[in-house]
Length: 237
Image 1 (cartoon, rainbow, N blue to C red):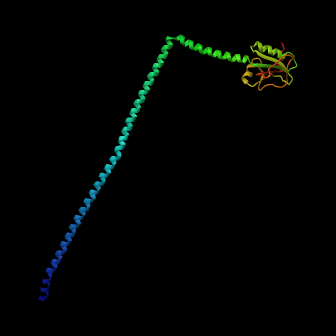
Image 2 (cartoon, one colour):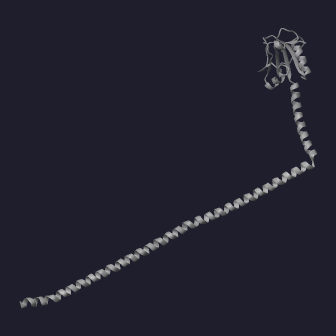
Image 3 (cartoon, rainbow, N blue to C red):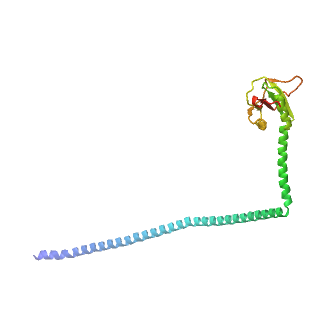
């Protein structure tokens, strides 16, 4: 019994040493873990701060150019608006000055306005007179297709009394109806004779066949207007 107790007493110090070593190692391992965790946390916080700083700098760089561009655009728009307003004001002043000057001239010199209006009326009258003169000079051939004698001569005299200077008359051997037919390549020339022949029919073209003249009377080979007098307009007196 004593031997066994003695053996246990000798064995206990070794166990205590081992126990102490294990405890120290565990404590050291825990300290290592704590410091390592603090280091990782510090690195993470530094990384977060760097990322936030870079993002803020990038955002500032993106915003600043846009702000400068918007400021320049606004300044340019203000300059353009001011220039347009100044130009419009200048044009308005010029137009107002011209209108005032024109009105003043018209009030101070009414005779000039009257002369201008008179000149315009004179030009219009002269143009109308020239057109009428040209129409009066057109060559006209009156053809009698009725069985009544003297019809072509009658209408020749009527047209000459109306001022036409180149009027000729002849007989027509073709068939003519009741209505007078007026041929011309220019419809406006044919429309002129609506006054003499209200029921006349206007046709485009000329008359080449069926013309019979009195011996000794010459007519143009081609006239501007051909009037085929119908039976309704068969007058001789």
